Each structure stands twice: as structure tokens, then as C-alpha cells.
Length: 145
Image 1: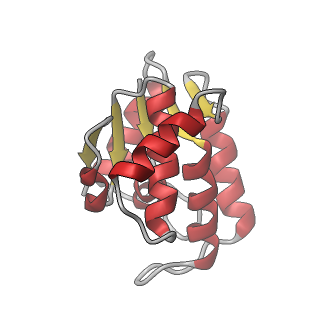
Image 2: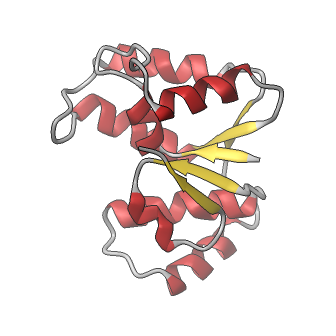
């Protein structure tokens, strides 16, 4: 299964909540949405997307909360999309990753939570626009953009 993180979703959508013009993230997201294969959004990536989209980031204006929520609603209602939630083994994946990937408790902590969910659910590839995600060996990280 393929999963997407917050940075990937931010790369695919404009601050107005529309899908961004012509870029690799949008192309891949459209392939996932229209394809037959299952794909997923880890809960922590979704929360991080909503936080970053509604507050804005360097070079990116904030989205209206209603636009960000509408975008998320559209994605999670795609038939092939699953929302990955922590299960019984999530804490074990999290502990193993925290021991092997140092973090400062900020964005790195969110990244570890996302990767732990992916690991628990058997995700084989994570689409991201954050090259720092490549510090994880599993799942395979595909950096977009």
C-alpha cells in the first residue's frame, strides 16, 4: 500500500483549497484517487496537514480552515483511501523508531509517528515532499518535488 504525508498533500493543494496546477504531487495524488489500488493517509499526517495548511508556512499563505477540511473530506471519501489509525502494535513501532531516529520533539516527532503508523499497517511506500523523511529505512520514501 502507498501512503501520503502532510508535505505531499500541501504540495498538491493551493492555499485556496484547489488542487495546485501542474506538479508531480498533484499528478500522483490524482493517480491514487482515480486508481483501483488502496492508498492511505496516516492520522498524524492528516492532523499535521490541517495544522500547517491553516497556519501557513514560509512562502505559503494559510488556507481557510473550511477549505482545508473540505480537501481532507474529499480525500478520505475516495473509495480506495484508508485513514491509518494507531492499533495495538503502534506503540511498539513508535518505540523502535524513536530509539533509532533521534528527534527534537518538533516536526521530527510527527514524522516518527507517521512512519510508525505506516510500519504498523504494512505501507511499502510513503509519498512525501520532505527530503528529511529519507532518514527512515522503512517504508520506502518517494520524495516528490
